[in-house]
Image 1: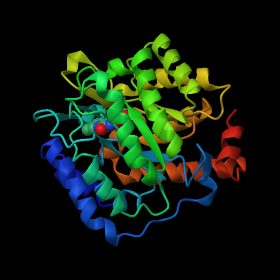
Image 2 (image 1 turned 90 degrees about the horizontal axis):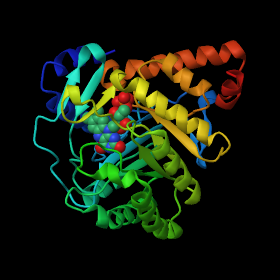
Image 3 (image 1 turned 45 degrees about the vertical axis):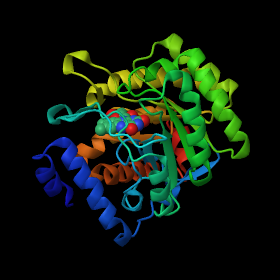
Length: 342
Ligand SMILES: Cc1cc2nc3c(=O)[nH]c(=O)nc-3n(C[C@H](O)[C@H](O)[C@H](O)COP(=O)(O)O)c2cc1C
């Protein structure tokens, strides 16, 4: 209810200043808020984990795990923190975050600004994620060469696996020079080999996040490796490059078509492999779009830009419409509901 008022103020100041203020306020409010339980019929199992609903928060909003208490108070069943790198880094020079309010889209070239793994680890330990699922999104430092990148990801996995519910290898951000080269066959294989060594000691669901700028051949080679290394899933997608808009990655409605295309290619390739989850993210701004994803066979969804533009009301609206649709078809569980969509 307070969000429209908050937005009126926040959208008057620089986008990154507003973002920082929001995270700080969430951090302060966190300990005082009590979570509201989602409708128990929304529950689903994925990657061996029990989710209270299919709706989660995408990486990049709470990069340093400073607002977990507040974010898990909202109807997000899972929250992904990060991207975290081994060493702290400042990211790219400012300004590096822009809004397109009419198009409900953002452009950012943050460049993995974060406090580094030691501080983020402490922040997670000092937070309470209230039985909700916590993901940690991992990235290499800018100064780490691609040749040495496997070491960064392996050490991040080792650090966070004991305290995370799932982990994500992020090699799809457009804002770290050369990072997306690691999505190519050999680079990704070396990363998976290095992380696999650490997975043996502490097995946790592991996913890879892909870019909406990959072609079908590139996506196919990721799927092949994901199967070979028995990853738990793929997150699709990160932001897209639209050179005519300027540097950085575009998210929100402007990304929607590309992200949806990428997800459909992946869903088609994964349809025989039920144990590999596809987490959908990128351009979702309404219940109807999420429903389309569920109709195509996807289940878990993450939001970012639409949450910035519409606030928590979007989450309440999604839950309300899902409950109404489930009632209409007499579904007692999310799986029942999804079966009724086909
Ligand atoms: C300001 C900003 C920062 C982001 N930072 C990260 C990040 O650190 N790691 C990551 O994997 N994705 C990051 N993302 C991408 C989002 O997680 C998401 O994949 C993307 O925004 C598409 O979803 P949306 O259209 O719902 O915003 C960032 C997005 C934005 C707008």
